[in-house]
Each structure stands twice: as C-alpha cells, then as structure tokens.
Length: 399
Image 1 (tube, rainbow, N blue to C red):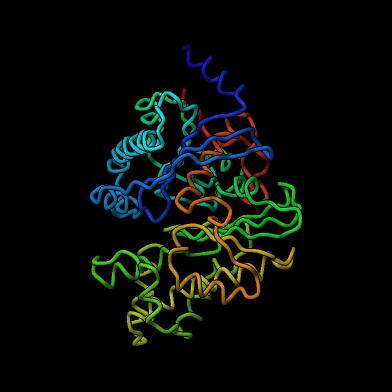
Image 2: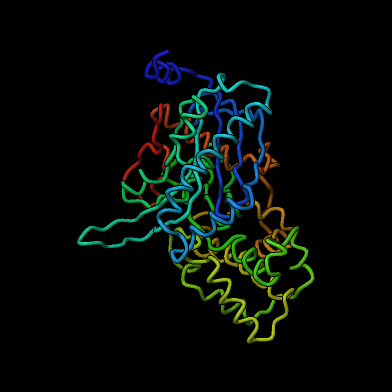
C-alpha cells in the first residue's frame, strides 16, 4: 500500500494499536508499551496489551553517560550513538509486540521519545540569535526503517520552536488520564529529575500546570555510585537511606539551591543536578564528617523536601491538593516514598498502579498518547506548563 494512503487510513481509524518507547534521565533502558487506543483527546480510552523495560547493554549505557558531559561527549560519539540507540529502540518495539502476541504488521504507530542527552531550557544567544534547545537521540528513521511502521518522534522541539521549554512533556497525557471533576490532583513523577503535573478539580487544559520540582533519583544515584566506586548504581528499595539519619545542616544548604525556589515554568536536568553536583555534595559531606548512610538519607530528603516546597509555593495557593499520584522509578525507593508522605501529610498519596497503569508502562504510555494525538492532528503540548506561546502539534512523522 502507498505510504501516504496508509497514513490517511490510520488517521481515519477510531481504534489504533500503538507502541510507545521511552528512556529517561536515569538511563535504565528502553521502556516499551503496546497499547490499544480508542479515540483521541478527552475521549481517549486505553487498554495496555503489553509492557516491559529492556535494559541497555552495559557498554552502551556507559557511552550514553559520556554524552551527558561536554568534556567527554564529542560530536562523533553523538553521531554514532544516535543511530545505535535507534537500533536498540527498534529492537524494543519489535520485542514488545512479539511478547504481547502480535505481529509488527498489526501495529499502526510507533511513538518514540528517544534518549535525552542535553537540555537547555533557558535562552542562549549566538551572533544575535536567541533560542532554547534540547536533544534526544535514537534516530527515528532507523525505527521506521527496521520496523516498517509509521513512527512519530522528536516531540519536544516543536514546543521549543513555539517559545516553550519543551518540558515537562508528560502534562498533556496526565491531563487525559487523571483529570477529575471534584479532586485537585498532583501527578508527581520521580525519575532522574522530579516533575509534577497539577490538575485542579474540573480543570480545562489551560488550567494545567507542570514543571520540574528539582532532583529525583539523580543525586541519590550519583552519590551511591561514586561512594561505592560503581559497585552500586542506586539505593535499592531505599535501604541505605533507611539506615541513615538526615543531616539538617547539609539539607538546609541543599535547599538553598535557586532552582527549587524558581517560579514555573521551569525545567532542569543533568546540567544542573548531574554528576558534578553529586561530587560537590560529597565534598561538603566529607568536610562536615557525614557518614555514607547519613549522606544518602540527606540527599533523599532533599528530593522529598523540594517537592513539598514547590507544592506549598506554587500549587496549594491555587487549589488545595486532594491527592498526589506518584510515578517513576522513585516509587521503588521506600524511604523516599515514606519521606514524601510525611512531608505532605494529610494529603492522600497513591500510585499509578492504583489506577490500572503499571509503573513501567506509564512513561511509554504517555508517548503513545502523544503520538496518537499527533496522528489525529490534535495539539498535544500544554503552553501553561512549558511557556509556549501557543498550542502546537508535537512530533515528526516518518512514513
């Protein structure tokens, strides 16, 4: 069938089989979902048919981390990894379809976020030109070629072109999935960076706010990796932090970070809270005589406390939060979740899984929804969240 006619056929469908692909700032691997999506916009209904996370090979993961640092992320490495990760994303798409008992020819769309390697959310100036910028690799042309499926990718750049920060990208999908006529909800994702989508009760899209609250797992992971010389890469179940005691003096210093108090719209990433920041925190802790367990407990509290501060400063004054719905890898850190619940009392704290969305499936489901909106011709950014001057259709279509 002619590819353009295939595109028109998919556009006209009311029910679509869509693969969503996502890799976040923690670089754990490619999270994939196969979902049946019925309708679009506020009429969207979903049925998850399969989901999984496919870990990056160790060598690939290490090379991705090299790209995060301007001192080691050379242009030749970026150029090569863009296509290698495209291959890995293609494999993930094919695997999730097969594991769910389908054939790749059954699939209508693939939505791919790619792997963010750098994000500049604030204006930079070059020879009189001013722009924000972002870069996700995992070449979507490779995905389209290897799978034979129409692929929609590169969602963030269109929002930036319209004057936004290109993030948080989850706001539109959160609005579709979690808006409520009588409850004000905060959808709190805790990946490498923590971000929130704020949904006032009975909200319309232009009432939605979303922004990064600060670090998620990034500093915790960095501290653990450095202090164990790579033997551990994260605090599994929050067991290290559980053994420690929060050092109030160090926590107070960390909470002075200007990003925590910055008014939205705001986004951040490794350029702010990456490995160099973790190293500085470790240096301060060593000067203060803080032991390893206490340090991990303190940076864990930093994530939890920064969420509370942002809620009190920017959300509760608009509408008191009735419920917080947690998602992202941070929900597996029991100590972090316990701290969040304590800081946010008496607000009810639940998880995506309480609403039928498995944790591993949430982020790729979000990408599948954005792809479905793009193919439907619907705006899928949230200007009140990103700061864009207008609604736009995010995503480049490869047929």
